[in-house]
Image (cartoon, rainbow, N blue to C red):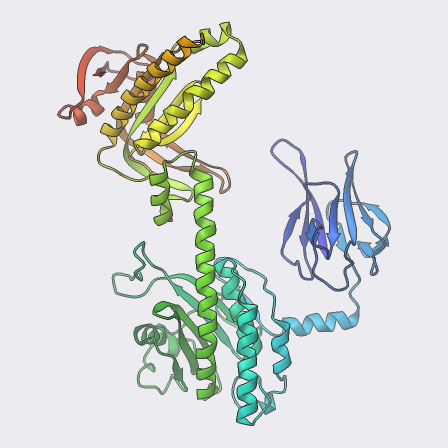
Length: 554
């Protein structure tokens, strides 16, 4: 069931969306960017609705001469707009679309489902699918349960067989690698299906680039993911406050723990979380694969005492082994996905070495940045405006396509960052995003290589009768803001500040084939192997005092 909405983008173009408000796609939003957009169970639809009452090809939405129509495709259950069955109808903002009408029996089923539990995730909410065959081994009759496990059988061999079947089914259900938040939520969902729980959580340890668990100054473990679930009728916190005393003990000993009455247990009765949140009985087991400790799986109850048994502890321990494999696979899957995104997003800005560092240290990848001391290089083609006016545009474009790749290669070979192209100009940065002490030296070495590369290009172009070029380069060192700007999908790495402006100004007054550096860059490199010649200081726009400049001799 969907809510139709019409918005407008920054160019006042209409943007059409469907948002699920009921059923399997509740909370999901779909942009109607293609026309026609198919809706149904079949996988070739634009919007796939996994519901037995929905036809394989149920309906389409078409944009015809600026008007959006929804058309029923002779579906079994019918298509409804605002409660009225339609064959074809015009969609308006706020319209409610139903692919079948929910009768009273359906409502009761849905209400029963929502009674099971309510999910709270610290970062975001996700929907999960349940392994339906697990339900075949469970009972809804609480009076027959011997523990929190929803098994009616009292004979040990029958219970053991069902527990094994549940574990095998859970292993199959959890085998597909997914984003880690989705996978953890799926694990908790299955656990609530199997056991009568009040609260449960999975906390995954955060690790440094060496793989060591990160701890606070007080040696408390740091968790990268904290996902929590509670029974629907429980009041209280949206975000979990669990017993850290119990969790720390399990992490330290890497053994499962059953606490029958925390308020009387000498180890935990003084813990503030136990007192405040009324924790009475719980199980907590490590999530680990072989020797790799990933985190903990925790479940507790406020009352009654002795709710969890040794059987529960053994089962949760066995279940956690399956869950740990699923978590580890999802973490690996997520890392591969994230690494690929980093390479795809930043390969046009950063050298391969820098990208490898970004993958190891993802703090540099996100939006935002910081002030850093960097060296900025500007280069542009002398008399480009005159040249482009006299020559065929195709010839000029071909020249630029030959000119820029070797320049960028030089930037990357010296671990520089390509900030941007501006027409015929190129801007690059050294010393960011990954700090390095020799950023001034590497920028000047890159500038020398760029001038030499232009000479080689010109020699080749002269032989084939093509146009030749000269470039000027300006370099400055200083503190500036560097970081990623834009949105999450289209990030641009940028350096912003006066240090950038000065390098651009120096570039503008550099003669053909010349490299000019500022006083700041010169002072860093004056004792290096680079040779300089100080030129007459000049007045530059935006600067009250005359600017000292130094020519690189090469």
